[in-house]
Structures are given as C-alpha cells and as structure tokens.
Length: 314
Image (cartoon, rainbow, N blue to C red; front, top):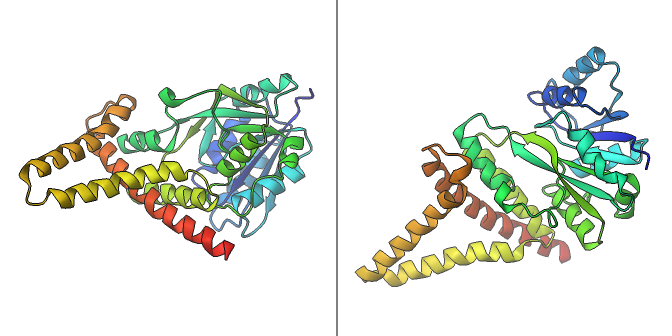
C-alpha cells in the first residue's frame, strides 16, 4: 500500500500547547506529506504561533483552515476532506507525539486488510494530582486489552476510504465524537489494529473543576449517544444502595458501623487500583477524591444526556 500520510488536527485557543504538538511533528522519524490544521475560531495567540512555526519550518507542508464555530467533528471531517493522501493520522492539541509515533501508527497498514490503527497514550504529568487524574482519564496499562482497544482521536490513523465508508466523525456529538465514531467502526466490523508503541503524551487536567467538567461532558455525550448505560447504572446503583443502607442504619449502631466499613472500603478501592501508577503519599487523598468526583460527574452528565436524547426524540 502507498504509505503517504496526511496528518490532521483541530484546535481552538491552544496557544499554550500548539507549539509542543508542532515541534513533536517536526521531530518525527517519518514525516507526514502534509499537515492540515482546522481552527474553530481561536481568539488567543494560537494562529500567530502556527504561522510563526510555518516560517521556521518551511519543509513541513502545513495548511491552516479557519472555520469559526466548528466543533471537533466538523473540524476533523473538513481536514480529512482536504487531505490528499490515503492514510489519515490524527492527534489533538494538548498532546506531544513520540518521535516514532507516525512511523508506528501507520506501520500496520502494510497489511492490506487493516482499516484503522489505534495508538496508545501516556500522561505527561507535571504534578502528583495530574498523575492521579491520568489513572481516571486514560486506560491504564493493566486494563489494556489489545483485541478490544478502540481508537481515540489523540492517537489514531484511518484510511480515508474507511472514514468515508463510515460517514466520518459524527457532527451531532460534540462531547465524545471519537468514542461514538470508534463504536461505529466496531459495530461495522472495521478491521482495527492496536499499536501500543505508537505513543502520544497527553497533558492531564490540572485542577478538580476542569477534571469534573471533562468527565461530565463525556458522560453526557455517551448518554446522548445511547452508550455505556450499564456502566452508569452500576455507578448509580452503588450510591442508591449506599443511601438506602444509610437510612436503614440510623438508630442501629451495628448496621451503621457496617455501612461505615463499606464506605471506607469503597474509598480505599481506587487506592488499591491505581496507587501503583503514582506511588506518592498525596495520592492516598487524591485518588478517593477523584473517584467521588468521577462518580458524581458520570451520574449528573448521564441524566443530562438522557434528557437531551429524550427531548430530541419528542
């Protein structure tokens, strides 16, 4: 197969991250034939920094398109339409690419049956809090199942004809478009390869509010798309059962002690799962806090997403 590659990404107000992404593209051991960037209407210094990078790196063929108000799906679809090559490599602002990323993300296409490649990603954390966030926002190594690993927009490649066959990224889902698209590929039995060595380094959220908003948006988008209801029901069920048991435990000291032990075990569970990836004592506090934050964001986001789905139906 012709392994000429178009790299695409979408941006919006990424003045703090765009230079790192472009610099990592410039350092690739295998260069893309073109780089296509779609900006959704940045009002900061993002565009200025891209143009400055273009002047310093004329050998990289960078095409910049501005589509004000475009969401990520609309931006990606526009970029892929503009792409001249058969293979589309995709990553996001807020990421840095390993120097061998492009080579490794496209290598599986030498097998002519492969249609999509899912790369892997690791956190580039600057604090213990961010290391803890990464255990909730990314698929940690012990949970990776290569045969079931779905592509995410921060590290993936797809044949342009496959993108077209599956009608592109769904533009009605601005919160979780790549997960919806990945499930569409899975249901359509697209041939997906997992490339664990196609590494992207991602910046985790740096504060509790931005983390909560991220999880809330994902949950809202999943519910609107009709995805992950079983997982959400499990989370909601824990809290409903816990609340019911707490009510029953009032005026029963033994039951109340049992409830407190169960609650303590639940808060210890995230430490047992993820402390191995942090190994710093503040994680003993951050991991349970992030568990509760994740749970509340999932529950409230799902309620909002279901309401949106129902209102669309009627």
